[in-house]
Amino acid sequence: MKRLHLLICLCISGNASGALPHEPIEIGHTPQFVLDLQVVDSTWGLKSKGEPVTRVLHQAKKHAGNPLITEDDPSHLWVLREDDGLFRMWYQANVKNAAVSTGKGIYSVSVAYAESKDGIHWEKPALDLFPDAKKYFLPRNCVIHHLDQPQCESGAPQILELPEKDRHGYRYVMHYLMTSAPMNGLRLIGSQDGIHWDFAKDTRIAKLSSDTHNIIQYDAGHEEYVMFCRSKHIYRAPGQTKEMTSSGESRRGMSRMSSRELWTEWQVRPQTILMPDERDAELGYNYFMAMPVHQHAGIWWGMLAPFLWNDLYASEIAWSHDGWGFQRLPKREHFIEFGPAGAFDHSMVVATPRWVEVGDEWWFYYAGFDASHDDSVHRKGAIGLATIRKEGFISQHGPKTGGVVCTRAMHWPGGDLIVNADAHAGKLQVRVSDELRKPIAGFDYDDMPAFTGDSVNHEVKWNGKSMDELKGTVVRLEFQLHDADLYTFTARPPAQPPAGKHP
Image (cartoon, rainbow, N blue to C red; front, side):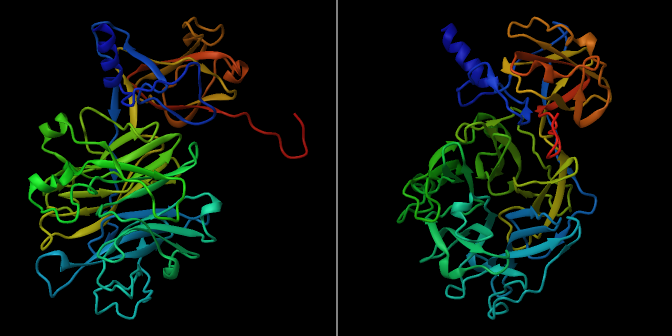
């Protein structure tokens, strides 16, 4: 029983997949997020009956100029920033058909394009690529629409990040959803400029009716493509009715499927990996609408969308270290909060996981709606912007009385210790210890000037000493936090000498 209790505690404490890393861990020079047991061994308060160290979600801050893009009732979207600084957006345009008042045909659904020099002021170019645009209520900036299937719906775009071997000569490859037979399913299409797409080589990779933002990520470690979609393949099979006993609606759980080949019909079926649980039931969010995913720093970041049927559509952070077992914070706070009554995002927030890094911030674009999901007649949508500090999803917060975040044993790869932390209201100090927590001489708390600022890349020194001296050593880092937040730490590689010169 004691062993069973220990296993349960490990799962509750933040390692839902159950696979703990082998110690000493290898961290390389990748940012280490301190939000779970992957790198953190333990946390504790300095007063045994005082406040503990706690994890804190930092909600994204909305831009004062929201909404940035109006009209088209936009929903799922994808944003990239080019090397020259140009922001480019592909979004699902849902243009109302004035001749239809209810039912599926109320919208003309297509993929539209917008661009911006600063990410704030956006333009919808009058591309006029399709001669039947007016007839089928297409916006002038429409870029994905099938002339041979003009009443089909095309949406939920994603611009893929691919190895060169699978680009098929295209600069841009889009993954998108198309409804209505015979072309219905999840599809790929290529382009050289992101505007003119090669419809002749448009390829279906999965015949699924997952009507949400389905996302493909390349898993380099396993050399395969992973898709996250919704579990509808067996709950709305042909011939099944919408009656709940028959269809089940799958509680709209999130699924995963994978393939080593990209441009082909994937020969697998989705497997459910995440379902609403008892905490969701307490909050009334008994369904999931979507979970688009983006990989960063070895973590699969999901923008989970809990759904209060058939009304509110929220946003929440979920994460995984293996692409299978996703974790969530127990309070289930929204990452981007609903707006106040009358705001464009009062009832639905449709967020993308693909942030844009601008200086020391991550920018998240999202679609919002001012009425419920079920009110397709009256609701209006627009696109807004919300930001967080770089790497700033979740922090470990130390109370005023102090607390410690202690890492697992790790091989220090060399370089300085860089911390992303906010200690402007208190202080942060770091001790370097050995595997059994014996402090290493010269790297104790008293050897380090307390950090009392707020920085995404503060360099830690101990009386001028750098952790580069400990390259190859097995160490633990013990972060002492007094009214301070720690987000990530990184081993920054030593600066390389200029070409032609030697150290």
